[in-house]
Image 1: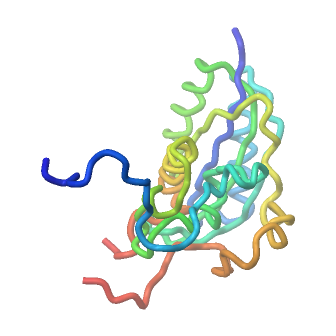
Image 2: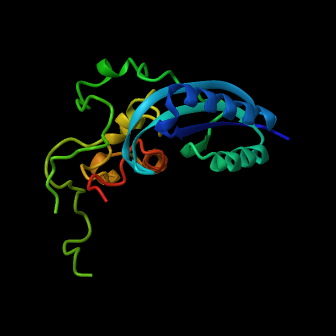
Length: 136
Length: 87
């Protein structure tokens, strides 16, 4: 059975706290490995503001997993993720075999600035909440 | 039906002035479409959070399709909003 490269971004309930989040991440990693997968990277993004409320929460912990599993095993992993209560949401995406591994957060694309003159000046990450915009 | 009045040999003319838009992802091959990169994706959204049509941004069809998928992935994990008007 050919395994494939996937990555899953998991949103963890803020109630879990730093330690709870770490534990859960370890549990998820174990889960993937249990299914015969090999985890190549686990990235902890820490707590981030959500673009909209999820389960009445404004923030959540983000953890990214990069791994290889068979498609059947992925199904099982996803099923188990939906059963974990502190997991608010997740998204699994298949990665191309030759795609570079996810660069660490916030150091992504340092070459951008000089590549194009001051395009997205909208600094500070999130496009999330553009309030003070009266719309009717 | 009655739109094209002067048929035949009219030179292709673009409305208005201004330079032709090029697809940003074609112009810069190192720029990857990634659902995790909410900042880049955000430049292809309106203030309301809607995806800006390729005809406005100049993105080519191939990249626009990928962009759309990326935005939708980003939305499911709350990296991008579905709307800025709070439900």
